[in-house]
Length: 283
Image (cartoon, rainbow, N blue to C red):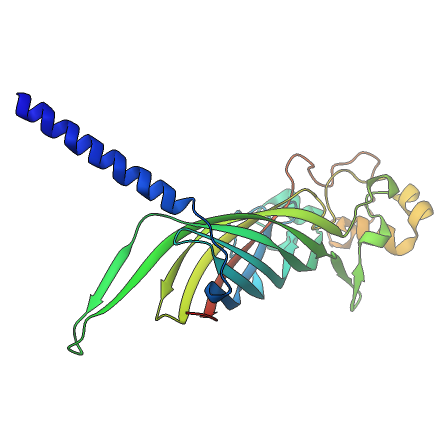
């Protein structure tokens, strides 16, 4: 019994020592230009908001590209400056929801973002070994999570009579509901990275970008009365604010004051699913 207790205490001290050493390793940061990587990203961008009921990020998604400058502060923490460009879109006509089809609104918007992200590699390693060439090759597949802050620019547009029109200057929900095209957002997500050799690595990641606007799609609250919209903002604004009357079965229907157009309960988000190629400058 005494031997067991003594052995347990020794093992406990050893575990605490290893844990303390690991925590020290994970919280010791050092910036080194030799551990700077340049990366190119390519993938898809989509959105979720008032004009897309499906939470599926790949539904109505588009090509996106980006770049990153990344530095490893230690084996577990990295920081990066990054930016991306892509398009989001939504179309009531593609929805299975009857009320959305009847509303008949649609949009597309370019998204350009740039920001700072902190990446945390999880203390998990998936090891692969190969001996088919006689020499042992050792690589690691490492999962990670990340969070950051960035600025982004968007510009919702609608297609009408053969032409795309910027929606923000038209005040489609009245001038009281104007919004800025430059905003702050919070990107967060997860990914996996795989180091090919000391210079090259690849990664794939999924990112959800939380915004603080409900107007990525130019839809959030209620309609103004058609006559008020026409008098206040002009014919094009009135036409693109309310588009149910473009449907054959709706005919001469016009917007009524206070009629629901969207829902301001939840802010819009956009998604990216990127594959990146990274090149280490140092080492």
